[in-house]
Length: 243
Length: 243
Image 1 (cartoon, rainbow over the protein chains, first blue to last red):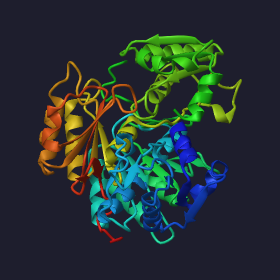
Image 2: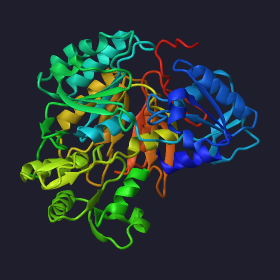
Image 3: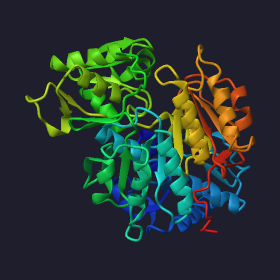
Image 4: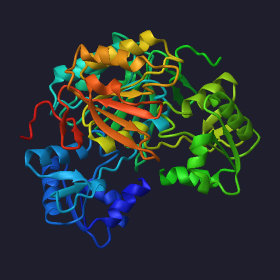
């Protein structure tokens, strides 16, 4: 957690978040009003945060990783637009003119935390795709995986599997295999930087034989990525100029 | 800077980095040996860091943003492999068996810092492309921009322009314009979270008319990205299920 996030929590009167995240920051929450809800209650949490902020409260809405990467920041702005709430940047200090003043605090995204545990897989261009087809049609996801593979991007896969979604990862694998060797390194990181963390360097062809879930990030190397010891490395150049 | 990075700096006896970054963390460096060099001396810095580590020194090699995202982490591993240095993860505590023990510390990448200043442009799948053709042939870069545009990824452009490279951004714009509307929001962030920071929400068709340089990150929205007030927003779903 960045010092800036910690400061924002200290300033907050109310802290709202998904139960698991609230538990992770328990020691910072003393004396504050806590509103924690279950996994699929994002809309409820955001509306509650907006309501409390409009009532004059200082609210911190907590996200895992970076709030701006598949996180809650966007939902706050979407719901504010939908509800016609006048929202402005806190830094602009338009207090009095706006209903809600907002600050978005960047964090360490789960995929860069995962990368730091694998070695250096993100030294070159990368594309991130969420395999969750709850809010995105599978055809859109499928097309993205195909284009990312064609572009020789390092590919980050978010939400590879859940209890109800069990075939998407194997399907993604088949698409990428059309363009990359089966032995391409694929890093699998479960629960990066949290309790129960597991790190594994596998291959593209085996990546769907591991135990993965919604807490897992998979990073598939590009055509130049290699494994050296316990490290997964994507060279920074295609020209190898520095040799 | 994360507390983990700060701790690592405290433990270090020698701190090595690009001059500008060393200056940014001046107050943390008291009593340490400092080795700072110019912009194109990456290889020299890495070799020096490896040499000092092999001599038994505790070395911190400093990167801007996240050391794993177009940063120095990969170069350390590449040079160690090239020099046949036996390198292992610090956590494995193989002291005595390995020449060098390494820890890679994730940070806040420049592009998520930039995103947090623009609103929430990264709520959906994104692709990051560096426009620097110093170590990558332009055909590879061009193909990536094309595929990222075809995949309707939010597109992050690193290194849009330098003194010697002045046409790549306009060329990238032309490629993306084949697939996206000219009025697609494009966020331009100069020197995110540092002195002189500038934030601008422009459009795809105008993004190359701004003053940009190597400190600038550009984020081009996907087909659903919109601007609302001073915020750039990519909706999290294509299905708009929650409405």
